[in-house]
Image (cartoon, rainbow, N blue to C red; front, side, top):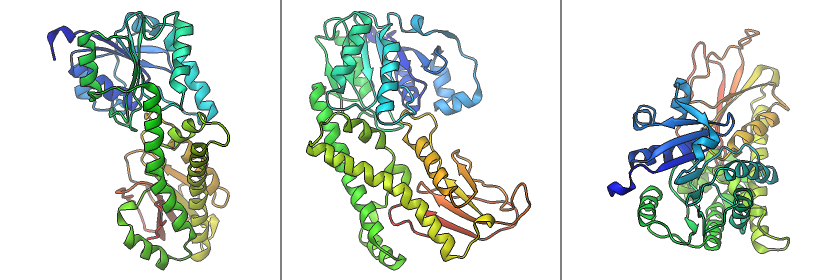
Amino acid sequence: MPSSTKGYLAGIFGLSTEGYLLASDLLKNGCKVTMIDETLQLAMSLDRKISAQFPSVTSLMDAEVLLPVEPVDIALRNTDFIFFTPKIRKSGDEAKTELDSKIKDVAKNISEGSVFVFTLPTYFGGNSRIIDILERISGLTCPKEFSYFYVPLNPRTKKAIVIGARVKKLDKNKEKFLHVILGQEKFVGLATSEAVLSKLLVSTYSDIVSGIESFRALENETEKNEMVSMFKKEDFYLTEIMDNLFDLRILMSGYSSGDPMLYLLSGIVRSVDGYVKFLADQVKNLLKLKELKASRTRIIIDWPIDEYEMRGEKVLTIAQLSERLRDFVTEVHVLKSNSRSIGTPRDRTSGVDKAEIVLRCAPNTTTSETGATSTRFTIDANLPCSIE
């Protein structure tokens, strides 16, 4: 990296996993970085020592490290790059409203000559709408007075799915810097990048949805096992199924009624939403099959999720799944951290020894227990919903 690229000032708007990964990479490449907690509206100064000591935003927040802070407007003023990486905990139209609000917060502080990088997915035509908001609030025009990049990131990574841009002419050193940070040599137009994202997501979910619907049609474990033996590489778990559901819901809002793409997206979303209900039904069927009493059974949702990732669909899905399960079993526990211990099988309050049903929502997770062993069953929240 040429020495002339050293000392760029970058603002990361959003205390997220993806934002922190970008911040760490920016620091390694000689950039000065401030990371903004969009909830507290405070900007924290980061340095290479901090990013090396804490490999993730989760570890940084858990350590409660005291970092230099300043108001958001000061932190974003005169920045060379603004990376928009907020955590969104809404879905569908509510997510669009929340995004608009956060974009307006940033737009107030865009400086002439800065580069705005939007890292969440948006619908077809969504980038033009975002640019309109930025221009209206900031009073600047794009690409004449600021540059805009559309860089939807893969969940929990700093890897771009596709990169679109609206730029007039970037300073050569800034352009080289972006190539290094974003890991791409080619930027395409915004409309092209939106179309590419739609195609990639529909292609990915066509395999998932065909698996969901095919396994749901089978009535017994023998039939499911026969199908598993034929499609071993397509064993998606709930956590993988939910990775880009946020993206699909956002994409739907960009198509008009009657559009074939809207029909495809709507069908995919309905199938994925139906899978959550299907999981709850599998637990209910197991209770009947094993003649387990609801009052003497507890359910463990074993799903280690990243609470700081930008997309909030998994957090919302856990709440939805828990609510469905509590319709027929009162005691439902959720394991969301990296700790796989669920404690004693003996009820903490009543001392009653209970049977347990563990719903394993991610591959390669292993729950452990302490104390006396009670009756336990494990349901894999994958496409065949296999039972152990």
